[in-house]
Image (tube, rainbow, N blue to C red):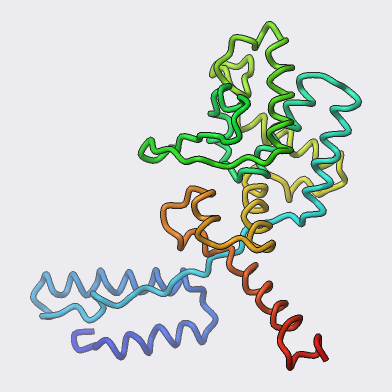
Length: 261
């Protein structure tokens, strides 16, 4: 180990990959080597650390779970049907939650932290980001806005919640809807809609928001702003959708493709 050079370390990493070891395992082994060579340098047994500037193998980022547009439409229709039958606060609240999640791509915490003023008659929803206390403006579709306005009317008629400052209040200690309760309601709705509840969560709806926007022609920068990602590299996990759309575009529009033949 006293005479190992960077090329030999690269060969070792290539050997690990050839054995089928994951990139996470490769990165851990490289980290161990880095610390060992650092020790050798500190003890005066080497004058250099051959892996000090060697980049760790990058982990593959798994694609987020997403719902098809048909699945989301099914969830929305099930929630609407439930409200049409029950006409109560619980059912209109669930519909409003669902509309907001899919129309804005809000994080769970951002959604349940919304003040009731966010349900006013304006066309935009101001959302406070948790990091740094910064704000971003998230456009709201007409359909979602109409649902939220109807929900607020029903909410204000309930004496238990009419004075609450929260858009989605509860009788819990925090005074607002909990993440756990939202999770439970979405799972129950999924079962009612005939969708595997394991595939449903507020975050999955956030992924659906971004994926469906890109699939229908939105640009990555716009989606980045709406999701509130500080770095566009975070948003790039959705580019698999763009890749599929570009492939379809070539097949449909290129003069030499079979699609135009």
